[in-house]
Image 1 (cartoon, rainbow, N blue to C red):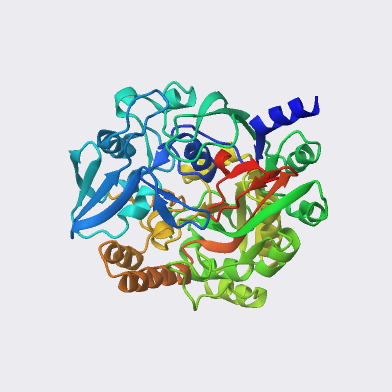
Image 2 (cartoon, helix red, strand yellow):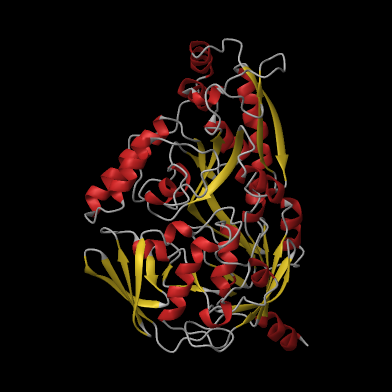
Length: 513
C-alpha cells in the first residue's frame, strides 16, 4: 500500500497560485500569471534560466549577420502537441499574429514592431530584418511563445481558452481549463528537452492568502506561490515545508492619471467640498512629488510586507542592466509634501480615490489602505477601493482611474519597462502597451529610441539609465518597492525559485532521495 501510494504521489503534483490566469492565449495579455502557464504549454526561441539570463530554446543559436539582420538557427526534430513539425514558418506566423490579437488589454505587439521583414531561409533557419540596428531582438524573443501555423490559422483567443488551439511544443499540454479556477496539465512525452517531472499537474488558482497556506499545510497542494508575508516566519520553522526565494524583478508602483489635461477633471479627484476641481492636479509634477514623498516606503516594507521587499524609486534592482545607481528610494517627508502641495496651489489639499486589486500582489489591499492613510495625513483626503483583479485590470486598461496600484515584472533590461510602461502610448510603434496612466515625456521617448538602435552595450545602458532617471524625477509613476519572490513546497518536493517570479509546472519536481 505504501509503495503504491508513493508511486501515485510521484506521478502527480498540485500547485496553488495566488493570482488568476486571464487567458491561455499566449499573445493576448502580458501578465505574469498568463506567461507562467504559457511557458508550460508553449516554447520560445530564446528561453531564460532562473536568474533571467538568456539560454537557447527553440533556437539553438542566434547572431547578427548584417547590422540590420539577425539570424536564428532552429532546433531540429521538434513537434507540437498535435504532432505537427516545428519549422521557421511557425515562427513567422507567430510574429505576424502578435499585433493582430483583438481586444488585447496589454499587447505583445511591441516585440514584432522592430521587424520590417521576416525571411524564411530554410525550415530551420529564419532571419529578421530591421529598419535599423536593433540590439534587443534576442531579449524580445524571450517574450514570444511560438504557436503552430498549420492549426492556428484564424483561431481566436477563445479557441485557446477552450484548449481547441492550445497546441504548443512545451513540456506539458493543457487538458482541462476552468477559467479562474484551475488548469490540468498532462506531461508531453514528445518534448524535445528534459522530461517533465510529473505525469499530471493540477494548477489551481487560490487567491485568498489564508486559504492557500491552509491548503499547503493540509497536504491538499504541494506548492504555493506568493507566500503570505504573515506566514513566512511560521513556515520557516515548520519542518513539513521548505521555502524557495529570490529577490525579484517586479516593481509595485502607483499609476497616475496623465491622460486628462491640466484643465480637465480627473475622474476620482474633487475639491474638499466634493465638487469637480476643473483641473487635473496630477499633471503638476509638484503634486506628484508630494504624493511620492508622503509615502513611508520603509514602513510599508517592514510592517506590511514584513521584510519581503526592497524600497524603490525605479523599476529594476541593483545589478540589473539599466539600474540607476544615484536614484535611491525617496525619503519619507510629509512636511515637504505639504509645502509642495501649497506651492502647487493646493494648501488645503483635495480629495482623491486610490484604486487597486485585492487579490493579485502580495498584500495589495493592505498597501493601498496604508498609502491612503499616508496621503490623508498631508491633506489629500483619500478614499480607497480595492477590487478583484479581473474587475480592476479591465478598468485600469480603459484609463478610468485617477491613481491606482499595480505591478510590473520586467525582463532584466531597463528598456523593457521603458517601452511598456513609460514610453508614450503608440499603437503604431507598439510602445506603452501597459502605460495605463498614459504618461508621456518626449525626452524619455527620444532616449529610448536612441537606445533601441545602439549596438554598443555600454552606450546603450547609458541611454537607458538617462531615460529612467528622467522619468522617475518627473514622477511618471510612483515606485513603491521591489518584491521578494517566495514559494513554499511540501516536504518531498523541490522547487526552483525564479527571478521573473513565474510559477511554472516544470520548476517543481520530486525531492532527491
